[in-house]
Image (cartoon, rainbow, N blue to C red; front, side, top):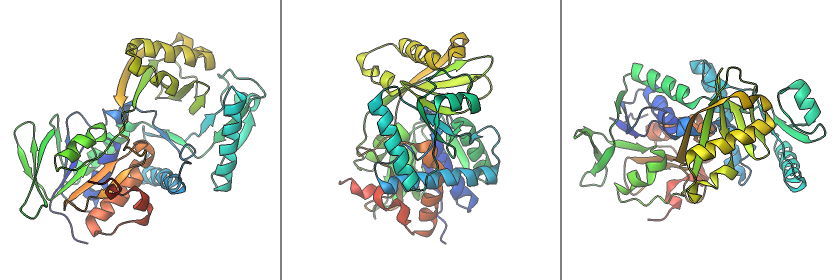
Length: 369
């Protein structure tokens, strides 16, 4: 296995941290580069739900996400679960017949794919799992026991910390403004906004919402969707829910001992109407109170609108770009679920040159020049 001389990992969210950690522990010289601080971008402002139940559009994508779930469990054993890993399952239910039928249809498909799902009633869920919820007693509720949520910023901090202990470097608060190539077109340098320049022979573009800009530095066209989302954290003296859930109109999950995270696709749709983020937060809080009345006593702490890093066709872009020797991409929505498995697969590809079949449908070359 030929080790690369020096790898610049651009973007230190969950994907960049996972790639860098895997490279570093196999002896590669890694330098993390981020305009902000590790894990404080989109990674810290996502719903952070580890799942494959919402990934049924393509079987290969479902399989990749199942592998992501397995990789999380392996990672928890390798580095310790501490304050980042919460494998408490996930609940989902609806409040109209069409949506309910769709959830039941999906649950049946997932069961056929050997994915664990339990269908309970609202009354059973309140009695057995979540007594603080309000829901009709007879409503069917899907419980996915193998799903989890992750505290992304804590996980990134752990991975970067271990990589630094193994000899990796870290440049935070500075952006990449140029990528230099040699006469043969291979990667040679990265120039940073602080005026410094680094000699590298491999670049990993894990820049999330900025990935298209970074790709442009090597004249690569990486088409990305514009899909903003709003996430609100609310502070509460007592967190009344025990797991992530998709209730009608609102997504709710714990975020530690005194905080809860809220998100809603319906509220996301209001972002481009120019609605103030504080009003979006109020609407999220109001929806959450209908499902968990105890949250009425909580206080809105922080709200963030951020762009999700989604390639144009909705699927990850992972692997080498053949036209530029030494340039790799690790760009994906669902980075929380996929981070550990993409980190392992891409690091292996960089170190060995061998392409894993699991990534066959998600190669960067599917986007034409």
